[in-house]
Length: 202
Image (cartoon, rainbow, N blue to C red):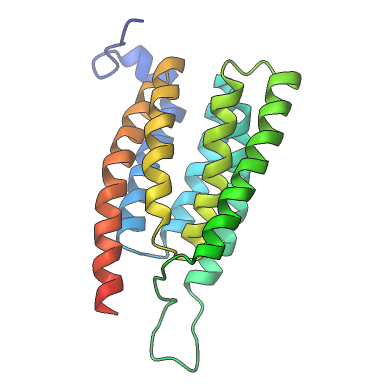
């Protein structure tokens, strides 16, 4: 597999402008997520719209459907993160840690989603990697819900999801997205440390 010199090839840049734009917007989303800024949900909504197109073209159908889920949960996230408790001095919902019960439920839901998605993709689509596509999608759904609820452990989920996703996107030739997810992988740890500092302070 030959890695294209996309940084010097203007034709390649012009033909991949949707993916490049989605990647740039996603970098902004990641920065805002680490900073615990509610505007991340607005930026994420826009990034998801671009990636619906990208994943459809790449035949990553589960990831494409996941972007539709991101659109919906972005609306939920913006309302939850800007919710003000009149009985509290805090101006935004606090960062919290996951409970054992919630963790078990999240894993159970993730495995059920994986089982359903893998069967749909393998039987009814031409997805090149149906089981891996289903795995990253299933856990991304639950990890994003953890994020929306400001549960700090969502960062650990993203460490695994982002690394596996990066490998899949490189295999499929989505090189800007591959770079994006490698950076996502690294900054999942950075994000955890930043959120953990905020959690300790509170």
